[in-house]
Every structure is written in structure tokens, then in C-alpha cells.
Image 1 (cartoon, rainbow, N blue to C red):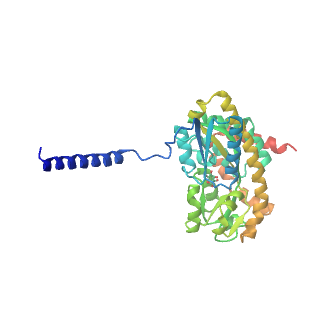
Image 2 (cartoon, rainbow, N blue to C red; image 1 turned 90 degrees about the vertical axis):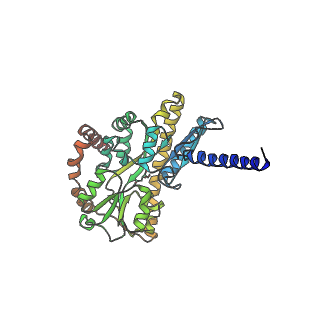
Image 3 (cartoon, rainbow, N blue to C red; image 1 turned 45 degrees about the horizontal axis):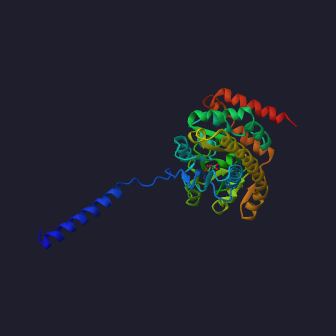
Length: 352
Ligand code: KDG
């Protein structure tokens, strides 16, 4: 073969190699967020994703949870914490856990009612009168029964952590009565009972993932939202909201969830360590949430927000305005579940 033909052939071979290489790299599937390494240096990877930021009680609870696991099972698990919805919002991370593509997550119970409708009982307005009753009922047999229902859906609910009593913020005007709520565009969680509650109050509610909320308020796509004080303060909502009314219209828990596929693959003794760690961290989250509720309401005022404390008569007007939601949703949630939880609330409320 002449030199000229040899050079031409070599160029052709190199060009083909390069082209094939590019195509094959294009053909490689993009690294999916859920395709994590299952092991790092011999440790099993457990990724836990939440929507809140690294200063929120829920994230501080995850650090406590990790500490407990590392203490009791040293060198066995690589617990990786992800805040700010890095691996997706509550609905996405819960679905990923169901499929076994994500090991753990800690959503609010509210967006899970599409998976376990009975969890909707926690969204009934003014169900719990205070945190003591909420903890007694959630941590008791009736609450455990709701966590057990999650297992058939591919999710192991380990414990109810504190999201908290929710309060209304808005950028339009002070709110003291349901009349003041009329026409306000309020972001709600992706949950039909929250939608019905704010419609009953005369608002114009919009379901939206938590991760989109700050921008929506900044751009005035919504006038307001409702969340517990630590979320309001630690997410800096005072920068985009002028008014907070301490409605306390519902108490929602976070649920610390582990994929049932991951859970079933764990030795029994490890399952017990994870379960005990979930309880230790739960109690820690509840403690620091209470401290933050007490201190951060004042900090919101110092940051320039108008903080409205409702009189008992004013709060009753809100309770009366949303009573219809119970009738509308009892059957949809499950009559037995609602009656059982309401009975436990009455029992716990009667205790001195
Ligand atoms: O991912 C954030 C949720 O878990 C929850 O904390 C936020 O209550 C919430 C809301 O309003 O979506």
C-alpha cells in the first residue's frame, strides 16, 4: 500500500474511533440522581433527602439520627444528608423511596395522602389542640396504625417528627378574621384538604411544591402561605412577607421514611438501631422546635413583620368557618380512621 493510501487509511480509522467514542458517550444514560453508589469504602450508602434547609429542626434531627447510627453501627453505614430538595421535592423523593431508588426521606404527611389516604386525618383543621395531645395520639396505637398502612405502599414510616402548628403569612394586609382572608392567593401543600380549608375561608388557594414557594412569594405569584414558625423564620419569609397571623389552623408532622426495599434488606438488629435512632431524633426535633417557636416569633417581629395574635373569639371564627371540611372529607379519609383519631384526641385532651 502506498504511503498516501496508508496515511488516508489511518485518518479514516482515527476518525471512526473518535466518532464512535462520541456516539457511545452520548448513548451513556445521564447519571440519574437516584443512581447512587450503593457502597462507599465498604459502608452501605443511606441517602436522606428533605426539602428544608440545613438550619431547620428537621435537618438538625437528621444529624442527630446519623450520630446515633454511627455510634451504634460504627463503619457500617454512610449516612448522606441532602437538604433544600436537592434530590427532589416531597412527592418525588417519596416516589423514589417507594421504587427503592432513594433510601430515606422526611416529607410532610400532607403530600402523602395520594399514597395513603388515611394520613389526611392530620390535615383536618384544628384537629389537635396542642403538641402534647398531638404527640400522644401520633405516638400511640392509632398513629402507629397509619404508619403501618404505608408498608403496603413500599414505605416504612419510622416516626412522626415535628413539622408543627401552621400559621398564615401574607404580603397584602393584616389578617384577623376569615373576612380578611377573602381573595388572598394562598399557596398550599399538594393536598386536597388544605385546598378545601382555604377555599372555605374564602381564599384563592394554589397547591405548589415547597421548593417553589419562596420565588412565588418574591414574584407575587401568591400573596401568602402557611407554615410553622421555624420554617417561616429559617426560610427568611420575612423578606417577602409582611404579615403573620398565628392561626395555628392545623398541626402537620414530618414522617421519617425508609424505603421498604432497603428496610427489608437490613438485618433485624440494624432495623432496631434505625428505629431507636428515629425516636431519639424525633424527641430532639420536638424539643428544639418548641424552643424555636418560642424565640422565633419575637424574631419575626424584630425583622419587621406584623405578628397578629388572635383572641379566642377570633380563632373560633376561623374554626367555625372550616367546620364543613370535616363533613366533606371524613368519608374520603376513612370514617373509621377519623373517628378513631378524634376519639384519641378527646381522650388525650381530657388527661390533666
Ligand atoms: O419538603 C418540605 C416539606 O417536608 C415540609 O416541611 C414543607 O410543610 C411544608 C410545606 O409547606 O410544604
